[in-house]
Structure formats: C-alpha cells, structure tokens
Image 1 (spheres, one colour):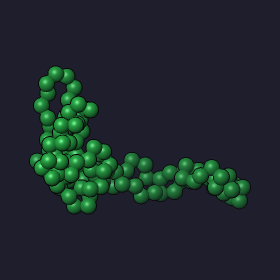
Image 2: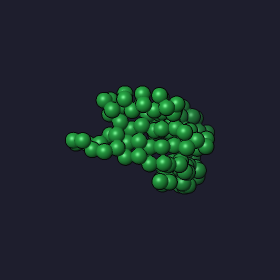
Image 3: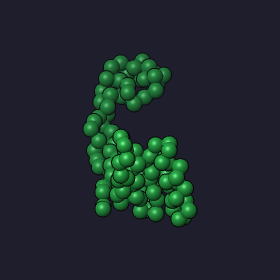
Length: 114
C-alpha cells in the first residue's frame, strides 16, 4: 500500500512518521503516486492541506486511470521539433512546419474507489 500525503509542512512531518512506523510507503508527489498506482499498488490519498482552522483530513482509496485522447488531437510540426530541426526542415521543405501532425496523448486522472 502507498499513502499519497498532501499536507503542509507542519502536519507532513507527523503524518509521514506515523505512516513509516506502520510500514507504509509514503509519497508527497502526485506524479510519483500516479506511477506507483499504475504499477498495481493500492493508493490512499490523505489530504491534510485544509485551509482555515481545524479542518478534518480527507482520506480516499484511489486508482490511477488514463483517459484518451487529451484536449489537442494534433500539433504544428514547429511545436514538436527543436528550433534547429525546425529551421532545417523549413529550409529543405518550405512551409512544412505549418502542417499539423496527430499525436496520441494520455490525460492522467484519478478514480475514487472509496
């Protein structure tokens, strides 16, 4: 089991310490949690980032999912190439950098289980 902690500096220390004492792996980065979840580990989100006062923790069992396609279906070639490659392409084939190329992208999201 992996615990994804989203907390401020104060609560983070004692939350991480409590999880480690129980033998649970903790991550504080959303991307790390997403990859570990995609690898098959159960992921528990613990949100202690509350705003004002003495708000309670939010805890949820989640799994990472991929949704396809992302917002843009195609991109201009000039946006996908480094500047020097774009200049070389434009010299060899004038106007080629204005064409759009379809690119498969994956949108990352979380599915709440409980």
